[in-house]
Image (cartoon, rainbow over all chains, first blue to last red; front, top):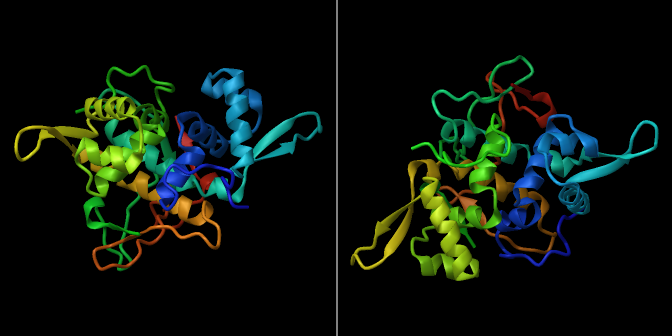
Length: 146
Length: 146
């Protein structure tokens, strides 16, 4: 499924802008974060995020419409739960990028934060933007070709 | 400089949430995108983004307050220009992650989009989340340790 087909794009040829039109608000990305962390039920998202029910309802609906989450019945068939789709799971690099920036710049020396580990319990190393030749690329060394 | 010191955090121990409290809106991230692409002047950002002046003024002020952009005088000393700080530049992985997700999921078969290349003109490969041992990590294989 192509996401956002009915969206009036902010900047139609820019993939950054299209992604932000689809998930570029704090709550949508925090819902995706929580889904990676195992949340499935409306009440779980609500408790984790502490947001108003109507905002959560709206964001979940948009994430389902845009193919990021899928609404599935729970085991009893009594309520909907939410699962990341394949393209929702593909937001993992975005969530990790946001996390790692925060770890480096948004905490003081005395402040603790959660860390992200692999299945062996070791912290996930820093994401690196690499060239096709395997060399680290800084922001101003890269060029947008239109 | 520690960013966001005066912010009432949405989720105080989570680096993802702190980053989103600081830059988690579409316009802020598109301003950062444009700064990577060489924009420096208010009028450049305004033309690229097509947003209302008061919203742009507000976002630029917030990005400067949070240490993402620095306001510097232009060559004539007549107006302010905006430069990414070191921690602003460190948002590159986030912008690349957003771009690559959009490239994969937000364009139809017949739609063209810009691409990001290295200095040799070759497309930047896909960002990969790797374990400390150098193995690809999927979202559900990673764990948040609080």
